[in-house]
Image (spheres, rainbow, N blue to C red):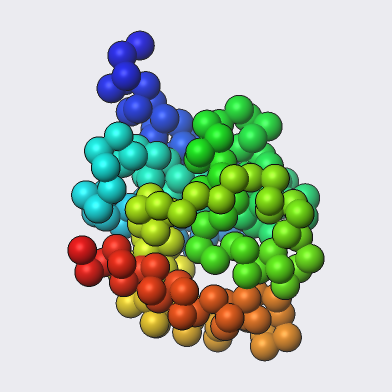
Length: 185
């Protein structure tokens, strides 16, 4: 298999795996979001080096796979998704991007799961920024949205006492900055 075929297969296998776990009546809205994030990642792929583009798109397809009920172990979707992908021997970089996507460190701190998150190397890169930007500029229904409106939507969806609400509230400035770095390129 040539490297071009391997790259194409990586993205296609990520899309198939996401569809397998998220294209259900229970998760239909999450599946719409994931498809939209993958589209947005494709649009933003020009902001990363060419060899990193399939990594970005594959991670976009897989970023929310940990919401699948049969994959829940810790209750934090980014860690649960990464654990599953690691068990499948997905490339370590994609596993780590899924684990740490979109302010996951803030939520892990709220949930007391920093040790579990730290099992995966944290990447601070244009790819990590583009993944967060794709996630934060895609609505729950897979449509384009501003980062401010997306964060407001998340905060409206969760009660103030929830770990997600507290984490996103704390992470907001960093998430906006991360998204602006990508979108304004």
